Image (cartoon, rainbow, N blue to C red; front, top):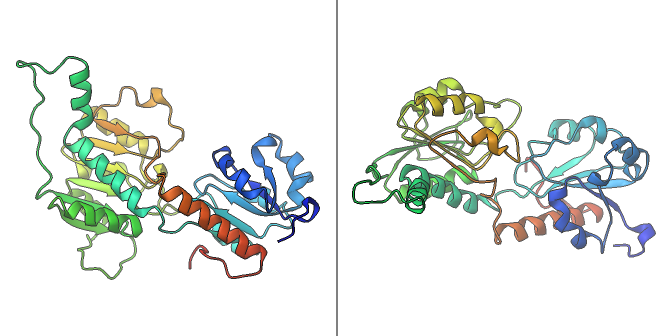
Length: 319
């Protein structure tokens, strides 16, 4: 790898959340930060013409009109597992490879999903708030709730994360079914449709990979099918749920509970959720652990190394 500043390949960090990677990159690359250029035209007319790789948070949109003005670009290396902000077919058609951190945080996301199930279903967060606010007395107690044993869990998307969630929920003696648009070889029963899965589930856990075809797949009809006793959990992407319909259903009681780590707009606006009942909310932290983050960053660095040395990429999308 060249060591002089003039010879270092130019790499772009696409989002401020990736700032911690900058010192890891600067030894081998000339690093640019997109947020330093509020006027993207200034970037494209300057360093953008030299950038050969983008280090990216895959859930953020990378617009084709910007990418098309970067003549030397050959790689988009997503630190994340997801890459829904990248138009992969367009990139492939224009000679731009896309990589991601496939499967590296599936166990952590699944752990978080189970935590959300427990926190909502058993009222753990509500209990904490009641105790702290003085609402635990001999005369005032939380109403008892159902346990998880024997309840039905529906998994939307049985990839790395969905399978890991299913294994964990089986330990609670839950009955597992799943649905995705494409069948796969598994011993787990697949519902005939998403609507049927929701109708037959007590808990519906969304683990699907988002793309342009499945926005709002958890529609008003699916939410109503899950019903006033059901729990909707999302650890995938906020775009998969019709969030307005879900909020309306929580407020009118046609959906029982929701436990969410992802939202249609991130960061989520607190005023949007302040009056929404029976929810447990976390700020998109399911896959971000001190175990998974170093592994994901390491794989991203390896993909960059492979690309600039003309070697096969470590984790290309679609491999």
